[in-house]
Structures are given as structure tokens and as C-alpha cells.
Amino acid sequence: MQHNYRDQILAFAGVWQAVKLVQQVAHHGKIENSDDFVTCVNALFVTDPKNTDEIYGSPQNLTTGLNVLLEQFGDASTNRDMELTKYVISLMHLERRLHKHPELLQKISVGIDTAKAQSEHFSPTHSNVMAKLADIYSETISTIPPKIIVVGEQGYLSNSDNAAKVRALLLSGIRSTLLWYQLGGRRMKLLFTRTKLLQQTKDLLNETH
Figure 1 (cartoon, rainbow, N blue to C red):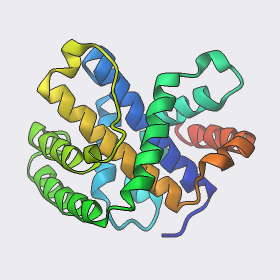
Figure 2: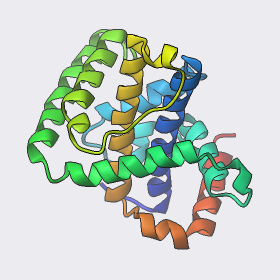
Figure 3: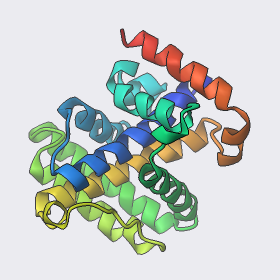
């Protein structure tokens, strides 16, 4: 897949959008924008893309993730959300460790194909699809330590539908993290390219207007 820095930031925004939706479910029991959710789930089902637009659609579909990027990497440190940062760092660790387990990668691939077929019969965010994606996460990524501990209201997190959404979103976060790495993203680079990252993020947000 051909790529450039724009694609890399779109993938990174996909990571942050996924964890932002995890936070919404965990603390409020619902996702504020259902289109954000559809974007994250559909990203799992595009397994042989020519470019990132095939994965996420237009940048407008990642407006939430792009705005979170601005908050997290902007000058106003008071806007930074350490809960989201911990989730993203955990996803980065897990994605790297996942590569040492080809049998789990294969299991994820087969499971995604099944969930994709379900999504075409029902809808991408149907409860049956969520249950399948949650099972994939539980049987693969959850077996790799350390597990991601999602914080929030226990009443929301103990709800089976919400729990399935959280796992599906974390799976989507792993997918976007993998894509980010494939497009040249690295944690160390973030320390030295903040200005470039912020400008590209702003340019992408301008495309959404």
C-alpha cells in the first residue's frame, strides 16, 4: 500500500478515535456519534486496502480522532487526557507483542472474515457482530499480558453489550496501531515531529469542513 505522512496521521487518528469511544462507553454507557463507531468497526473489515481512505473513508469520518490528537499533542497541557494516553501506549505494546504470536494473528484473520460476513448480513455495529469481535479480542489479544484495564462506571462496564463494544473498539485500536506502524509511525518519532504532526492534523481537519 502506497503511503505518505497524511496516511500515517489518519491511521494514528484511528487509534485515538477508538480509545475515545472506549472511554465514552465506559464512563457514559453510550457512544456520542454512531458514525464514529461505524468507522472504527469498518476499519477492521478492510483487509487489503490500496490506501487509508479505503479503510476510514474521508477524513471527516475521523474528526473525533483528529480533534483528540490536537488536544493530546497541542500546547495546552491541561487538555491532555492521561487515561486515553495509557490506552494508546498499551495498544502499542500489545501490537508489537502480537507479532510474536503468528497463530494468534491467523486466528484474528479468520475471525475477522467471519465477522465481516455477519456485518454484511446484519450491519457493522449489530449486536451479533459485536459479540463476534469481542470473542476475537478475548481469545487472542486478551491472552497477551499485560491486559488493558478499562476504567469507568462498573454499571456500564458490566453490561454485556457495552463490554462487547469496548472489546470491539480495542480490536479496532490494535488494527489502526498496526497500520500506523506499517506507515512508518514510531513512538520515538512523536517526540521530534510534534509540530509536523499538529500541522498535518489541522490540514486534515480543514478537509472535513
